Image (tube, rainbow, N blue to C red; front, top):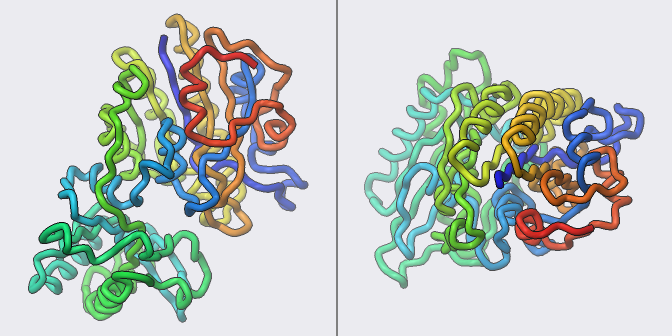
Length: 404
């Protein structure tokens, strides 16, 4: 039996005035996702507990069958794993975005997709500025996504705790930042580093004269802190080998911590210009040697953060045409299979932020008895009797003996 999970990140949404009261899923042309539902079942699940902030770190952990209330320690440790950064038992990882602040507002949480060569300049300056305190390590990622690691001396050397509060910068798009600066234990440390970065960035030559013509990054934004999580390997938990195809460090890291293969795809960007067809081909190739393959696409989430309704629809249609369609066709030809389509959380175009709430899932394949559904969208899922209140219930349901 072969299994595939396709994650159109953040695709669940609200009805849009610009779409005549339809959601993007309803408005998009999605014949292959609709086929999954028509040949199988449609339901809904809640991937993000109400007590936790909504994001892919929580949502995908739920989708993979792990209760985030038990296993989640923070977003940054997952990204550290993606970069091969080993965390000691008392170390902390913190997400470090390059951002552009204008008149006290979050003008761009990506610093307009900062080029890697500019990022290298800024990381070097940050590391030099903290050279007197070797417990701080800055690690460059891709574009605006970077990491800060705190190396603890011992168990008593803990600058942060569960009460340390930080805010994802993508939740502040076009909004004032003053009320959302780090707070709680260690908040002053993080705010000091953020403040120091402003002067460094104002003097960085490549940053101030960007070749792409965009405004410079004005500072770092620190968030998503956490210590090393203890996750049961996926093979041990579910008895299946796994692989993940993604352009996002968060998913790479979570995959590595679960013992999966992480498949790198040329042209996969983590943005709306990603090579969807290459991801579909990579999934088919990976299935030949792996039980379970996850294909994650960030483009729908990015379009939501930017408030671009038509880009979101375009991304959905590309996922449908170039990933769900060919992968499902391959699965049907090769033998017993199941395919699951489900986002990790809603991301609303109206607010440009991640949200809580139910997301639709569609499953079809071997021993999946079809219900009466024929459309993959939030409204149709809301009319379904198939409800899994906790997102981590979906994976054992997907692998188990399905009845409905």
